[in-house]
Image (cartoon, rainbow, N blue to C red):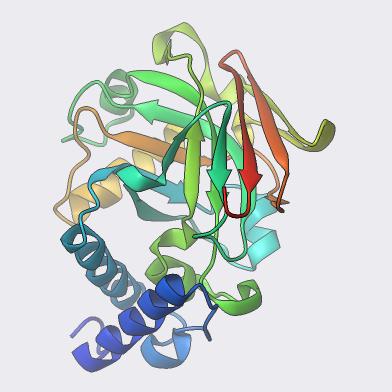
Length: 265
C-alpha cells in the first residue's frame, strides 16, 4: 500500500489515466480512487504509468518540475511543486511542427531546461549549481488527461505532473555564465505577446527548483544523473495552445525557441 491506499486503487487510477491517453478522451479525476492528499499514492500511480510507457518502448531522458510558478499554481488550483518523467518521444526541436494528436488540453509555458553535467548525489546548493551544466530555452506544453483541468495535487502528480511535450532551443549556455534567477521571458502566440515573466517566478530561482528536485529524487532513491534533461518550471503564466498556433519564447540571455502546433501534423 501507499499511505493506506490499496494497490487495487492505484492500479485502477493508472488504468483510467492510461486509457484516457490512449483513447484521447479526457477522464474523471483520480482523487476519487486515491484520495485528494496522498502524495505517495499519486507517485505510485505515476510510477505504474512510467513502467507501462517504458514497456511500450519509450526511453526516459530526464524529469520535469511542475507547479513552480505562483501564477501557474493559481491557474490550476494547487499550492506546491511536483515532478514528472520526460520520455524521448516527448521531445521536439525548435522551429519544427509539433502534432497535437496525442494531446488533449494543451497549454504552453516557457522555462529553462538544464542539461546536467554530473550526477547529483548531494542536494547542497553549491553541488547542484556545479552539476547544472548548461541551460537551454524551452517551451513545455503541459496537458491533462483529467477533463476540464479539474485537478488537485494527487490528480496532477498521478498524471505524470500533467506532462505533454516539450521543445528545446538550439543554444546551450553554461550555467556559470549567467544568473538563472535574473532571466527575463516573453512568450508569443501567433506574433502577439501572450505571457511574460522572469527566473524569480520559478521558486525564486530555477536553481532552487533543481535543488528541490535533486533532494526529492534522492529521497525516493532515483538520483538525477549526468545527461538528464530537467525542465525547471514555468517562468510565467500558461497559454492555451490551439491548432495552427505558432508559439515562440524569448528567454534572455538563452535565446529564442519556437514551434508550430498542428492537428494531424
